[in-house]
Amino acid sequence: MPAYALGGVVPVVSPDAFVHPLACLIGDVVIGPGCFVGPFASLRGDMGRIEMEEGSNLQDGCVVHCFPGQSTVIERDGHVGHGAVLHGCRIGRGALIGMKSVVMDGAVIGAEAFVGAHSFVPAGMVVEDRWLVVGSPAQPKRPLTVQEIAWKANGTRSYQDLARYYRSALEEVTPLPTLEPDRPGLALAEMGNVPLHQHRSR
Image 1 (tube, rainbow, N blue to C red):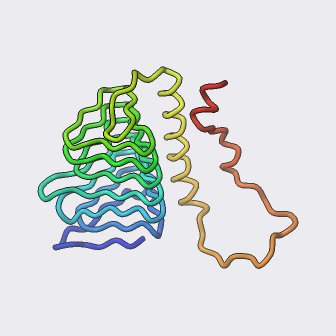
Image 2 (cartoon, rainbow, N blue to C red):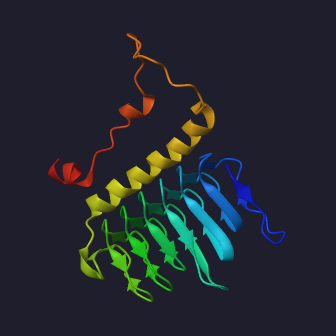
């Protein structure tokens, strides 16, 4: 992965985390055990610390930064969807940040809370534990159900499994010119995860 020291401060990555080779780490970045960082994620710790606690994930194309002297923290089992932007905020333990959401400076997302996809969480907003917020600007919608929280926890465990699988099975290759007749299936296709709207209808 591209990792750069800045002013003598070197990124830290736990040996049992997975950071994709196309993600970029700069300066004061700390990635804990069991974390997953997807391709094209940018963690730019040039003004303050960026920290991912144990078991958290940051998916493809996410951007993480902060103002000078501040920090951005994704607490244990935090789950950040594709293309999200986090800037000087705190994502609580077990929280979910939906795809393409933006969470601004000083915002605090409570434990096991959900931020809906494409939401904008303004600076300083505090989201209560186990609440769903949606919109631009984000507004509290309702408390989360036990089933929704369990669905999210299962998804996060899948990313923890994914980190282990990638560390053992990912390899750079030259693409094949044609599809082989006995093409194997992916082991991860058997994990059984489904989108939330399908989970609700079960």
